[in-house]
Amino acid sequence: MTTDYRKTVTTYIAPQDEEKLIDRLYTRSIERKKAIIEESERRFYPVAEPTKISAEQLQKSIERQVYREMARRQARAQEADASLYGPNNGAAARSVSGKGRIAAQTLTNDEVADSVLRLYNQSLERRKANMSESENRYLFHPPESKKLPKGEIQEYINKMSQPRKREYTIDEINKIYGFM
Image 1 (cartoon, helix red, strand yellow):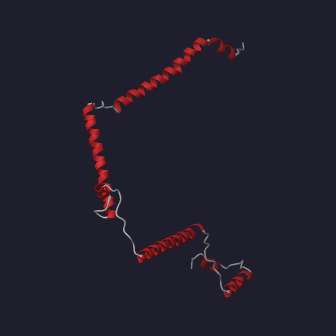
Image 2 (cartoon, one colour; image 1 turned 180 degrees about the vertical axis):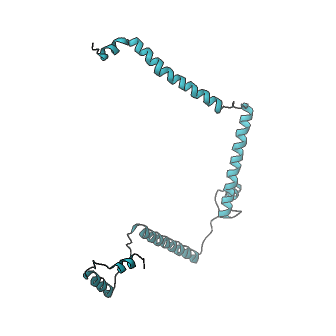
Image 3 (spheres, one colour; image 1 turned 45 degrees about the vertical axis):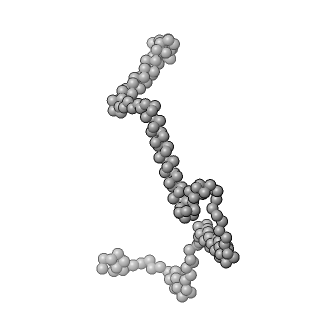
């Protein structure tokens, strides 16, 4: 008696039963695994309840932080102005006078010439430094070629032209391997 197994397997499982099996074996097992993971996360990584503050406290905190930051920035700006323009010529002095600019200083012809020359020389030095750095970085620098003197070359040629010794005595072999 021969049985065709393909027919028996397909005839035993109805489409509704197949859906129930899929639901039981796949969907429920995934849900169960998710529940286990969530439970273990709750147990090992508990989440604390957030602290609630009133709107009044929140507003006070925001104002305090903003005012502190603004004061810090203003102090930094005053320090920067003092370091650049001196203690009495910065933005604080401009805001007090209300003009919004510093009195211009006139330079003598010698000072202008010195300034132009200094700026020109600095730009040339910077350019030369950048060029030399670029050359070192991007140009190919081959190693120095080693040229042997003619005497050494002739010595190598003489050694290579002589036939090699193929037969060794026992004493020579012991000497080569360091037994003597």
